[in-house]
Image 1 (tube, rainbow, N blue to C red):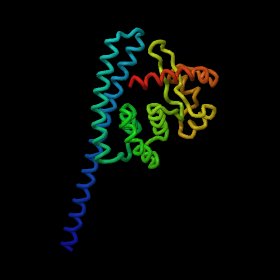
Image 2 (cartoon, rainbow, N blue to C red):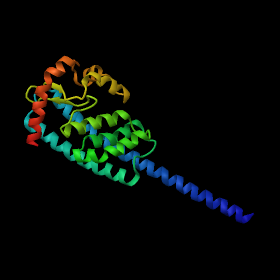
Image 3 (cartoon, rainbow, N blue to C red):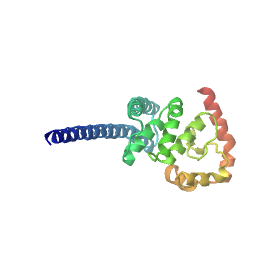
Image 4 (cartoon, one colour):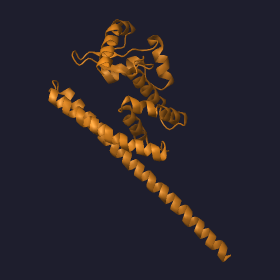
Length: 221
């Protein structure tokens, strides 16, 4: 009987230690993601504030982009470490889940290509949103010189401030594809995020110009 009690106490001790260790790990991951989210968003709100003021001095814009690049690089190091050590964590809040996606979305093409299968698997496991995968696929496609699938990528001409929907595969059925991944219609999306109107006629009218601009940009890069 005494031996049985000792074994039970040992089991409870080991089990409590395991639970406590897991709780500490979860707290550490949550704290890290909260910190990353704050820095990721803060610098982007600074940019939005500058843009809302109207005319931006070239020096101001350059300074904030340099700062943003540095912050994004530091955040990516943390997310790389997190995913390499633990994979995509379980039971994250919506914001913490989105933080991982945002850091990857704000990274370079090579990193996005690297993590595309990781996000695809996370979607299959119900750990992140299908819309995240769709947006990342669009971003990669445009960067690779291909057409986007879901219409999430918008180009802003720095000279005229005019906004364009970047080249789309089969634009007539884009809303059907968007609905399947939980994205709003093109009309709703463009109005809410870019103060634009969606028009197939205007899209086709603008297409030769935006294709020309993107080709010129790719040559410079």
